[in-house]
Every structure is written in structure tokens, then in C-alpha cells.
Image (tube, rainbow, N blue to C red; front, side):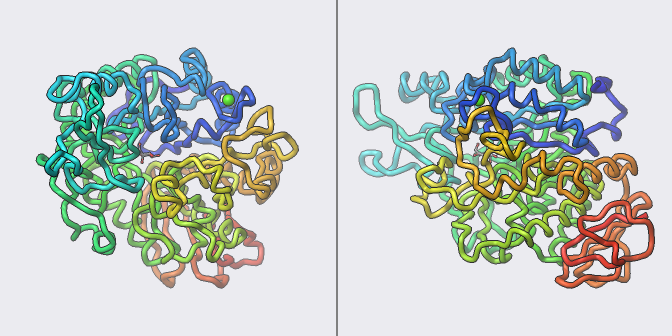
Length: 554
Ligand code: GLC
Ligand code: CA
């Protein structure tokens, strides 16, 4: 059973937890319509308990027209029929808690769906109304308001403004959408918006959920006057600490919002958690989101996006521990999620192939095609290193199977708005969102009872099926299970960190709670230091640590 007591500050579960991200559409389908759902998830939870994770985070399953796979919410306190009912959610929560798993729910406060009642009312009532003041409506520039209010671009490509049509058919005001045009941004300076979200938080907290993952937690406050700003090539090539201030991401105004949320969470028992998706750099800035009176965790994106470059990995580990510890927060670690190229593919890419903007920058991964075997070796090594680091780690469904990115999705099957908004220039994120394989010989590889899947599963996914890996020595699944068991046994999540001297830069070597961890990022084997090998990502029987491999030694 889940422990419901509130612990002494400094000892909360989330400081060292391993949290597994479930992407509901692609995890398990119970009714054969090709889309994963809540009963599907509930049925598979025992597998996650067996894997050894502490919590699950569910990407959005709330009511939504699904223009951005649920990150466009039209009712924050209801379940989308695509995924089931509120009773299904309650059952899932009970099932998880019974298995000792905590449940974190995705909250999308930067924008709603265009189909939310509030936005529909804003359109219907017209300029100057109370309803409009909940969103970011502005008059256009130019003689007839035909130009957007400023030059901001949507993260998904194209302009960040869309012009409305007045009830009488004439062209009207413009509204801001940092993402798709179906995702209008709220105006968070409006107390009304803040109060509604306090109610939404309470609704889920009262149900007994263990916390929220907060979407676009760096975007809620916009700089007054909405000054022009472009993230062009030069911007991305500038070091994060030297970049000009971004008027829509990372503004200080967000912090008072989270202080209010934190105060609310503090009134609930059981160490509820807020985890920020605050995609800001450098890490010292990100750490502001997890000061003692704000959120508890922030996704470590600088760590995630670090390429296969040993010097950079060294540095980001040092910077992460320093930045988060300076504010009394644990560091988090993460290698994959639903917005990024899966790390079993990404780590085999030439480090210079991707631009800095990760959502729109994931171009066609065709030239040259990353080597799957090499990618898997590197991913296993990288995960073996990550799970030995002190702090909290996030896993993304399928990485425990060693799943690669689905690269060759036919254009006609693509669903990510990024693909459509950039006219196919950017492939977007569908490749990491393909339904995962459970059983090699079943229809849809055991994803559901039919052969339907909302994105096509590539032929090679069969060989990664979970049932082919269960109980198989050396499989990626068994590697993850062993890592999670030992991480727990040796208290590595709450442990210490110390680099071990005497190794070349390509070999990362550190100690945590008496365990020594070695990661060989060179392309040749290196001698394995003396000691009892507890776990290794590759065969080390010969006494050497192969290229790309990592090992834990006592
Ligand atoms: C976050 C989500 C992403 C979504 C975007 C807009 O970055 O992780 O999937 O598209 O916010 O809500
Ligand atoms: Ca379904």
C-alpha cells in the first residue's frame, strides 16, 4: 500500500522516486479501438509494480478534442470518453495505490482547448468582455487590424496569433497561442483564472492523487506589453546565460502562481508533489521553480538533451547537482519523454544533427539512419548511469524495452500538429508515441485486443516485445528491473555523489553510497576496476567494460 503519512521535510518520497511516464494513448488499449485507455492502464499496472517504479505520471486523459494529443483540454475535471470514464480513473487510482504506486496527473494551465466553454464564451461575447479577459485577446496592427499584434512564433511553427471572426462575420481581434491555434493561452494576470485553477487542483487532490506534472510551467506569465521577440538561429547559437530575455517563457511572474499552489498542497497530507515542465536554461534558472516554497521537482532537460559527448555529460551532472542542491531540491534525471526522440535512437545520432529547439527541431531522421544496435548499447549504458545518480528519475514507457524511435511513419499517418504546421519540414513527435509492444504473437503486439493502433507499429517493434524479454537474462527489461531493485536496496536515490579520480574523460566514474559506477563512452573496451559486479549493461565477464557500457561495482 502507498504510505499516506506526511514525512519530515527532507525525507519525502519524491526526492528519490523513480517515476514512470504513461502516455495513455499508447500504453494499453482495452477495447480494441486502437487508442490506449484508462482500463488498459489499470490492467497493466501490476507489470509496473513488478518493474519496481515508485509512481506513474499520466499524460493528459482529461476531456479534449485531441488536437494536440490531449494537451488541449476542454474540461479539466472530466475524463475524455476516448480514455474511459471518471469511474475508470477512480478504479485506476485505487488499483495503483493498492500496488504501492503513486499517481501523478498532468495539468495543462498555460492554455485550454479552443473548445473549452470559457474560450467559446470569450469568442461569443466580443471585445472588452470579462470572458475575453481570461485569454490573451489583442487588436491587430495595421490600418484594419490585419496584422498580428506582435511577431511571436508558435512553438509548433507558424505565427502565435490567430485572428477571430466577429459574431457578425467581420474580422475581429487576435488571440495568442504559444502552441497550436487550437490552444489559446490564458491570461494569468487575471485573478478569475487563478481561482478556477485552484478549484481544479483541489478537485484532483481531493480524489487522492499524489501530485501534478505541470505543463509549460515556464509559460504562464507574459511580459507586459508583449514586446516583439524571435528565437532565430542566432538565438539558439547563443549560450543560454547570454540569451536575451524571452517575453513569454521563463518570466518571474510565474513564481507567485506556484507559491500559491504550493501553499494549497501543504494543506493536504501525504507529501503531494508538483513537477515543473520548465524548459528554461541554464539550470540555475530552472532551479528557481523548485525553491522551498514553490514546486518540488523540475524535469532536467539540459541532462536529457546532452549528446554523446563525455565532457558535456560530466558538466551537466555537476551543474545539475549544484543548481538544484543550492535551493534544497533533489536533482531529477530523464532521458526520454513523449516530446523527444527516444534515447535508444537519439544517442546514436551525430551530435550535430539536431537544432536546439527540440519540438520543431526533430527533422527527418533519415540521413544517415542511426544504427539500432549501437543506439541500444548506448541507451542501456546511459540508463545504467542515470539510475545510479542521487535524486529522482523519470522513465518513459517503452524505454525499459529498449524501444527505438519509429522513424518511417508514412506522412499520411502523422498526427503531431508540428508536422502539419511546418509543412512536413519538422517530423514532430509521433515517432516516440507509437503504441508499445507487450506480446510478440498477439495482434497489435499485445497493445490491445485488435490489430488497430492509432499510429502504425514498425515491424521491428516485435522483437522488443515485453514477453520476449521477461525472465531473459541480459534483456533490457531485466536490466531495468535489476537496476531499480539495486538502486532501492543501496539507497542510491537518497545517496551521495563523488567523482572518482584517475580515469580518462571518456570514462565517467563516480561513487554513490559505497557503490562505484563506471560508464565507458569511448569506442574501445577499458579494463574493469576490481570488485563485485552488481549489474552491467553489457557482458563484462572478460574483465573489461565494452564500449558504451556501464557497470555498478561494490
Ligand atoms: C508540453 C507537452 C507537449 C505539448 C505542449 C503544449 O511541452 O509536453 O506534449 O504539446 O506542452 O501543451
Ligand atoms: Ca481504447
